[in-house]
Each structure stands twice: as structure tokens, then as C-alpha cells.
Length: 430
Image 1 (cartoon, helix red, strand yellow):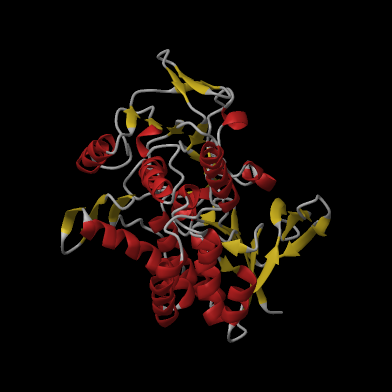
Image 2 (image 1 turned 90 degrees about the vertical axis):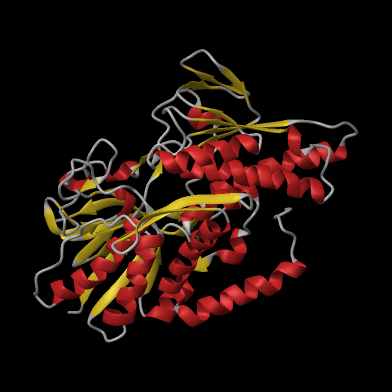
């Protein structure tokens, strides 16, 4: 019987792995590759802040899993993982419902010989009172589009009136997502006014970025966070550090320091945790963030037939007490290694072990700037800022597209995007 490799999660890492394995093992019939995801389309998660601000039209940049599977010799199954039976080597998928609540795809089980879990992470609101009820999150395309629609609704209501109005946005968490969203919203305010929705002036969009730590981008070096902080303040973004949100209501946020921040739109972008269904699933070891504990081979600690990688896995770093950071470059590296690992496993050969390589970090501040550093064996650490950093930032997404489509199709996509600019608005207006 052909070896069955089941990959759960079609994010950047899971989709890249399914594509690579399909092109090799699947194409020559050495293994049966199946990808499972709860959605029919994929969009690169680091772009969701652009979807929220309207800078990116997700319907134009999404990838269809069914088509990708056909082109790359793997199978796709629509569904959300809800359980695991390690003895029977099966996963359970919950029923998928359509927009009106009717069952589209029934509850069912799928078998595997090798299971790879790559379900990513969700935003962690740390149980803050009112956060789940009153904040928007940016964990999926649907959530990002919901934020964009609410933002646009404010402008449309103001446009139908006779007086100028104001809008206030509070973003909790000054990591990369929060910082990039703040800059994109400032750009969106100018673009919306330029298209005639000017009852809310650009200076009347009040953006507050709230961070519990002592500085923005706390996971990155000071030499990156300092210029980012300065640029945000130049753009008019109010940056609050050492401010832990203790309660969220319908129209404001409260901090432990007693500050009250008025906000008509509230976004929670602080912290991550793996999906709750992973917590101790069928006896596998997990941590307090629901992440599956894995060895350097990316196999789970208690089952050699189950691998996990990306944000949903707690992978140790050699020589460090910290786990591999939940970053897109880590998932990309792990997907590349697992392609080799699973081939070696089928041949009965030793599998490689994963060691995280930090190639630097880049943060986009919309059209205004970008800041970051690149790290390599030859160059050491090189600080980038301005247009050059923006070029390298854009190249990260192109590298992801090359992994999925190949070089020539990606070049065609870039050409198509360039041609389409003259016939499309610079901001999504619906």
C-alpha cells in the first residue's frame, strides 16, 4: 500500500510542504500526499494587515487549494481537524457548514501513515475582560476583511453626512502585525480622502498603538524598534508602551495604569497560542500555549509517526533555553527540511535535525518606509532602512510565491500586478 502522508494546515509552511512533496513523492507515486485545511483558499498570513487596511485585495492574491493540488500531484480535503486517534492512525474532521448553516461536508475521519500538523496559531488575548467580545483579530482573511468593512463603513456613513467626523482606532500589541497595521491605516486615511471620502480627514483618524512591553517590536533589536517608533510618531500614531490592557468595552480600553483609550475600532494583535483542540490531544505533550512539543527532527515527543512545525510546535533551539520563534522564516525552513526528512524516512535513512537560522527581520511601514536587518555568514548583520528595506520586504512574499508556483509563473504574476495598477484603485473601496 502506498505510504500516506497527511498534512493538516494549509498555511505558508503546510502548503509549501505539500507542494514540494507532491512534485517529488506524489508525482512518481512514491507516496500519497493529502493536504487538509478549513478554507478553500490560501493567503500569506503576513499580508493580513494589508487586507485589513484595504491595501491588498485578498480575492486577487489568494491561491486555490484544489487547483494547487491538481497542478502539484497531491490531494486536498476541506475540513477542520477536531480529534486524533493515534492507535487507529486517524484524524477526525468536524462537519463543514455553508453560509446559512447547512452541512456542506460531513464529519469524517482520514487515515495516515505519517501525520504532519501545521495548523499555525491564533492571537492570544490572555483572557482579558471584554477582548473577545469587543476586539477584532487578524488570524484569517475573513477577520481581516471584517475589519476593513467596518473601517469603510465609518467612512461611508461620514460621507453621507454633512459634517466632518473623526474615527479612533486602538491596536493592542506593538509586534510586527500591530506596527505594520498602524502604518497601513495611516496610508489608508490619505487614500480614502483622495478618493473623495473626505468627511473624515487624514488627521482625524486617531490611531493608538498599545504595548505592554517597554518598546515597540520587543522581539527585535533596539536598533530596529527605535527608528520604527520614531517613524510612527512622525506619522501621528500615538504609541503607548508599558501599558497593559486590563479591560475592553464597546467604546474604550482600560489599562492597569488607569488610562482610558477611546476607540470605535479595536484590534487585538498581541501574543499567540496554538489552536485549543491541540491541548494534550490523544496524550501528546503540549505546553501552556497549546503547542505540540517536538524533538529536533520535528517529530512529536511521544509519537514518531506525527510531526509538527511552525507556530503550533514548540521546537527547542540547540544551546538555548528558548524555543524556535514563531516566525514565517522558521516555518519555511522547517518545511524545506521536512521535505528531505520524509523522503529519508520512506527510504529508511536517518532524518536531519532542525536548527533555526535567523536571516534577519524586516518591518514594513506601508509606503512611508521599511526597517530591518539582514543576517548571513558573509555579511554579518546589515541594517536596512528606506526603499532598499522595502525591496527586500517585498521579496519575502515573492520567495513564498516561487516556492508555490515556480519562478516563471511568479514573474508572470508580478507582471500582471504591474499592468493592473492602472485600472484598479490603490485601495479596496468595497
